[in-house]
Image 1 (spheres, rainbow, N blue to C red):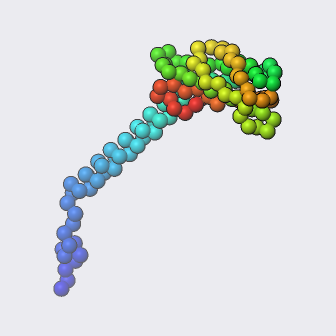
Image 2 (tube, rainbow, N blue to C red; image 1 turned 120 degrees about the horizontal axis):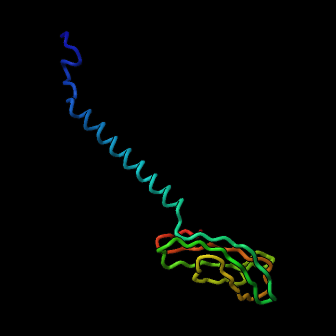
Image 3 (cartoon, rainbow, N blue to C red; image 1 turned 120 degrees about the vertical axis):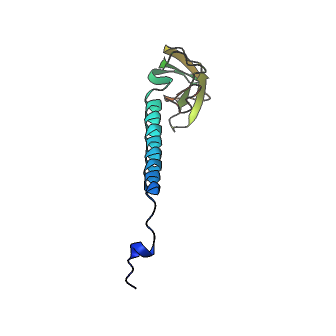
Length: 130
């Protein structure tokens, strides 16, 4: 009974190692491709926005200037501006269709607002506000 383990149990076939390496390589390449696509998609949004300035016009109105950059061919762009009271509650909200460049908007408020915040802009294919 001097049989070695290799004699007792057959070694795995050579093709199995090659297949395993090929499958692991394909899965790794697919994962890297997905990461590259996600990074590119997040780095090149269809619409970007920034709040430039705002002014409290009265007890029931604030004005804001929003700078919006819309990529060519983008459809369905929409922006949201919120007016906030001293207690940080939202007292007015405006959804508008932006044009590329500077957008002057007026938000009607239910009571006096002290600040304005830009919730962001979205477009078809870009659900996260920017």
